[in-house]
Length: 407
Ligand code: ARG
Image (tube, rainbow, N blue to C red; front, side, top):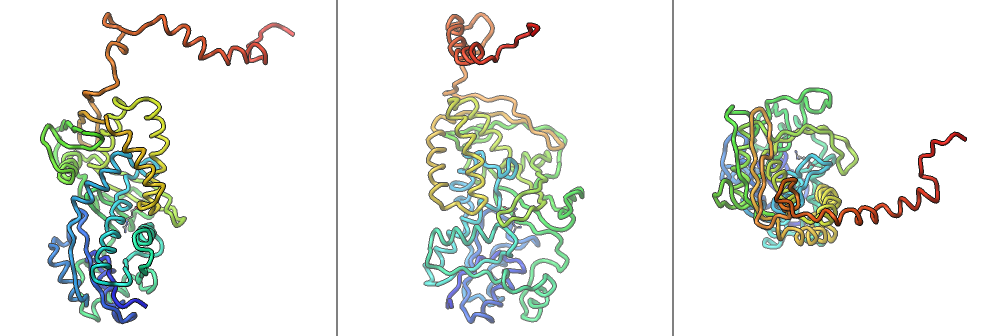
């Protein structure tokens, strides 16, 4: 059994109770590691230091907060943008992207502290356990992974009671309705009324996508080699750019998703999301690809994108297939450079109004029907005849011909 455990500590009820529970039940030293991937520290408005202190009060021998916001943006959201990533065509992988970041830091801290196990606070019903464990095994196959919450069988009330008994301060109130996971890429909301797929999702848990203005907003997103680098001509770090996009698109109510999804563990689940920046940036990126990618490359990429999303959703961020698809995607992005103009209008509408690129494959002379036409019309007749040659041979010899003669 492990002696030193590095726990992914969110500051919430479950992970706070997990600190004490592992000490009591396993006799281990717990090092609490909180990874800032762009979430707000606490729903009650506390800061990271308060979260750190709570871990110590719960019994952690050490508590660290790691700022991984830039890493989340530059290595994870960046890849999701290049891949136009949306699981089952809808969900831009919010939680799926943050788990490998967190797992990587858990492993780093485990090495730094000479720990022999890492731990997480996931239940047995979700995808996040899969992501934490598979990512950890990919990075450090020798480390044990502990999942106390999956094991202890406490209800929420039991956990609240356990916390009270051990003087563990809990940030949230007893009657927490929703399970919310958030980071730079958006927010995932589960539980409560949402669990009835027929019920209208309540407005109350949304924080990023409330219409706060009726004024439409036009934004020009500039990309270099597939990566957004500026908004309205102002260069920004990707983390800040995503943040700004969340606010601009979100304030017009854009970015909500309501879906029933297939979890890796075989459960269908109704979830709602708000991802204004992610959805806007992916839409802009995909549109710029329409202008700059050669046809066969574009079509092949469209086939691989759902596979990439599925792999990441299923916890395979660190895997040879995901790496191989990334290599393909990277090689397609060299010329995905240019601007896309988006317009947001309350309530929740987005339109792509225009796109341009110094390396666009759109050629006005070829496309136009007016006098500037440079297309060689005479080439088409032979091309089309050969394109259809096999079909006309088949029709002649094997009766594809419509024969209206009376028999
Ligand atoms: N269903 C989403 C996913 O698997 C969101 C999960 C949110 N996680 C959470 N602990 N609330 O990626």
